[in-house]
Image (cartoon, rainbow, N blue to C red; front, top):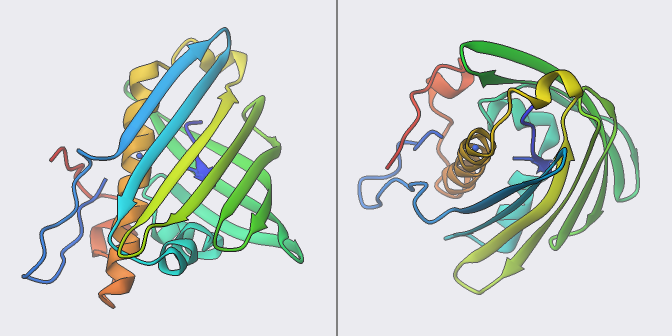
Length: 204
C-alpha cells in the first residue's frame, strides 16, 4: 500500500547499518519528507544527501532486482522487461495499518535518464494510481537525492491511511536506501535482520 520505488519508488521509509568504527551510522533526522493529502491523493516530497558519488547512489536506487534486500517493506522485486532505458518492475510489498499487515502487488513502468532521473508510473496493482520522479544531483563529495510524486490508494484502504503513516513509511524507505548506498561504498553486507525483515526501526 505505502509503496515508493522511486522509484520507488520508491519508492520509497529504517535500519541504521553497522558501519566502520570511524563513521557514525546515518540517521533519519536530515531526511526531509513532506506529505499532504488532496482529496484522495497523497502528495509526497523527499530530499536527502548521502556521502557517496552520484553513480554509487544511482546503482542502489535502480537495483530493482535486489530491492527486497534493501528495503524492509518490499518482499520481492524483479525487472520483468527491458527496452533500453525503459523497464517494467514487478514488486510485492507490505505495510502496517494499525495492527493489520497489508500486502500489495504492483507493476511499474520505469523510465531512466542514467545517473540523473528516474520516472516511475504504476501500470497495474492495488493502488489506483502512483507516479514519482526521482532526481540524483551530483554535488561533488556528496549526492543530493530528491523524489516527488503522488499516489491514490484504493477506496478500501483510503480510510486507514494517514499522512503521518505515509511520512513514517517514506522516511524509513529512504533511510534504508541511503544506508545501502553507504554499505556498498564501504563494501559491507546488509545486516541479517534486514534480510529477515525483522530489524528494529531507528528513530535517531
